[in-house]
Image 1 (tube, rainbow, N blue to C red):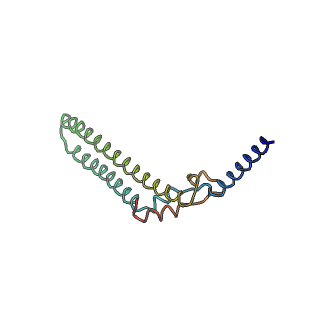
Image 2 (cartoon, rainbow, N blue to C red):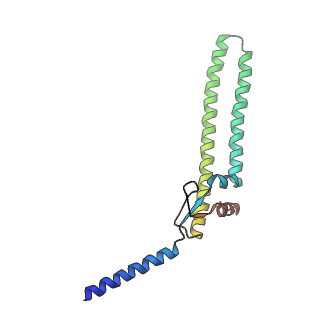
Image 3 (tube, rainbow, N blue to C red):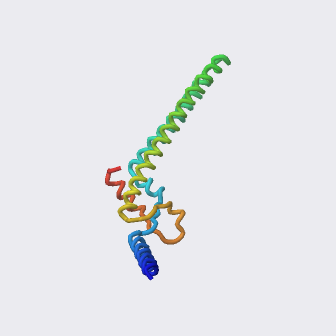
Length: 152
């Protein structure tokens, strides 16, 4: 009889705990990362900076092509090509490093703001909006507002 009462009490506590946890959890949120990026001033500035660096490399190539055409001997052209190839490789590596760094900074800042919104909204998880078929809570605008506070 004691075992039956203990089992019933245990089952009752488990059911109450399950309902309590369910009541506290708000579910799953989703975010349109692209929309957040487009409305985040830091991301906009970073994209401009990366684009400017890309244009700088394009201009470098145009200038080098003009210089190449002005060379008169095959030896000068070969030396010029070798030198330009090494310089271009260094510029491209610097460009890729800058691009990856900026993308990582943007991602980390958006992720931090998203985590804060997730906690505020008492969500269990946040996924990309393309994953959600039905349901969930769109927190895109909340994340954009959070990023505009300048904290990130």
